[in-house]
Amino acid sequence: MSAYEWPLWLLLGAGTSLLFLNMQKWSVEKITPAKPLASQVLVLGGMVLRWVLVALILALALKRDPLAALITFAAFMLARLVILAIWNRQWRLAAVQTHSKKD
Image (cartoon, rainbow, N blue to C red; front, side, top):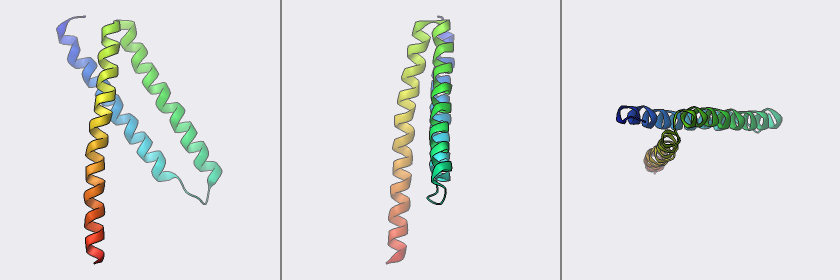
């Protein structure tokens, strides 16, 4: 694997992570207690779809080079951590602002 391919695999891993988390967020937002069966199908179907997406991306990288798969997986996991940390901070700030408006 040449050095110019590294950014491609890093971006592919990070992009997959962003897509993964946005799909998960969308699924959770669509859950409703009024439709428990539809909510279960949505959650399980979304889970399978996300797993297939990650598996395909990692299989593509592994087909190219084992190091590419490792880079892609590491970028995927690190990007997930960073995105979740950013979202957590945003949610906490929104909760504090909402709570302070009630007082």
